[in-house]
Length: 200
Image (tube, rainbow, N blue to C red; front, side, top):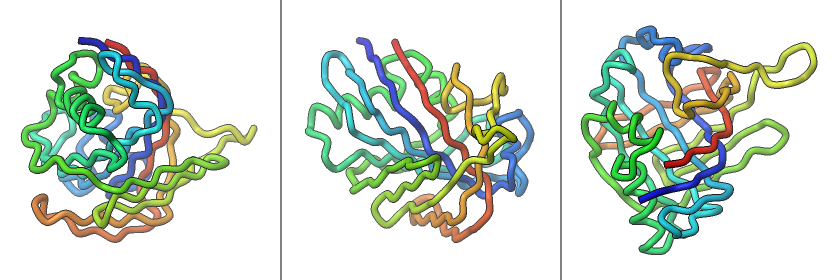
């Protein structure tokens, strides 16, 4: 069982900028409610092409991110075929090993897995994701004096292990999920962008 996946992430949470989870500190409010989307520009999972598809998560993290116990809802791009759906779910359930399996170890419960319409765009550094009626966010990176995005590297925690993350801010963030008891509407909070290349 193997995969080769390349793409980018958009991530938003209720913490202030910069998210303390990435450096191993407790979330600002003691808990963290967040959303994350992986978009695969190019990828195969056991020979199944998943290029162009997106998988997203709504998450409730009960304390320090490294202590695990996350409760998540998984959303798979509604355009995925049954074979693509099963392949993506297997990777993000940790069944195929690799760096994504290490992240899955932090999840205590997956409350739902469902198909959803997912919008995912990054244009001129500005990102947008919309996942059904559950998640909607617009974000952009901070930039340094040269105009390049501000990078976070060698952090103790990462949703894109091995790659730098671009520190950003969400101009808007809406998160709703009944099973996770999530209902947020925020502006000006933490956001992360980044590219990745995963293999197993």
